[in-house]
Length: 175
Image 1: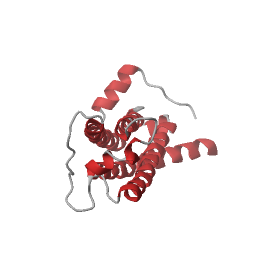
Image 2: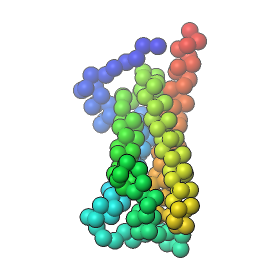
Image 3: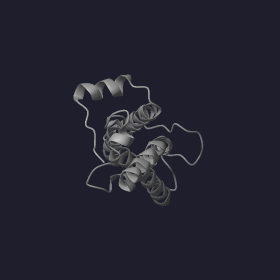
Image 4: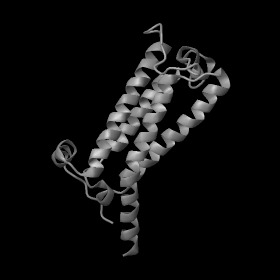
């Protein structure tokens, strides 16, 4: 299978002006990743002292963002709070979704497979982290769980294109 690499001007035109269904789903996924990055920015601002309060954004007794995001749980990796790591993670997901042209499932099938794989890893990691949040704090960060929902939606958006990419790979190897 030959991969098609677009010129920068072709890529720009396709990403900004294309209307293919996969491309539209990718745009929504990028938007969800940007929303996740914004959430990560708010959490980071709290964890680094830029803001002093982090009120929960969902109603209910299970939520305590300030407790969770100030706890040992949130600061135990790499000598830093987890908010900046969350910020980078959402950026990487946006990058995976943005890579390639409008027909990347056929022209560069690895790209949609990487994007769907990244989204699946994100969702699995969110589940593991939510379990750890609860185990360590008996509370959840509402901001983080909204980000989990964004990750789930992103995976759902990435799957149809990844399925098409798998079919393209299978078709190429059958010849």
